[in-house]
Image 1 (cartoon, rainbow, N blue to C red):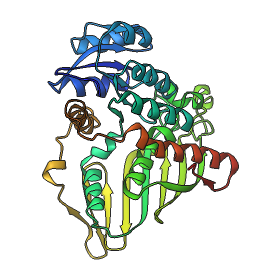
Image 2: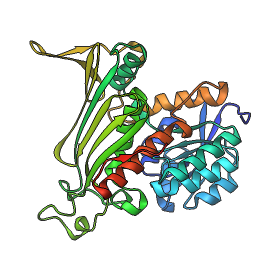
Image 3: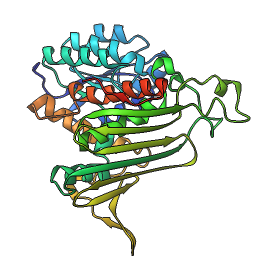
Length: 355
């Protein structure tokens, strides 16, 4: 692994989510220093750089990688740019943090994982949802065997998507060809959770839907949306458990619930910070979040809190060789499930996940 000292120099590619979460996340940790920000729009890059006292800003990520010395490249661009930027960073032996999904397909994912291994650098996909207090607590319970044999996971996600919010800005996220759609944007997090708790996926059945393009009274721009905003995904895991992920992008409010059933116990998650058990007599019995998993809230940007945990883990991995993940190699399992889900939607049948 390349030798790195403090402060760890960071380049950020992408100034949308990169400016809202990546930049403040790294800026809040004294062991990191942002040395450059790139965006598809020069003005956006300059604005993000100015907010954090960064001298270098550009609309050309290739130029930034060539001109600015750095230890880590943090990628928060549209999905279709993940592969070329990550590959260029790895070729320069730089550590990489990449947003999810980290590739457009399994061949790209495998190529990046192999290159990262050859280069001996830290490589992590930003599944920061793992560090939300309730999910982290469930992960610990699964690891400690509190559920017994895992039997079933049910994830229900409801959010106001493009079809219910005509004022919502339509970006690359609405373009299927660029890797847009809620299957990748949020489904990747949910599939990561399922595989993190239950192991690899054996086969899937998926139905994707683009509600925004067919909802009555929507604008011509919404009618042109090609990316999915609703999906139902059924998964059979190699270990014998089953899972269902149901996301609906036509809700009026944001709501998420997770239920995990085992042979010995069952737990339910409501939102980011509440976990407990359903009781026939008392309704929902919340249980306390362990102190070491109860990260402070960041009300201005909720995802900043779990991202700061990811940043701390990156620091320990880069400076001390501590484990951080999911690595590119580990995240291939999620990419396999996403690819199979799209094939299943096209065929209307169960699809076996690539081995």
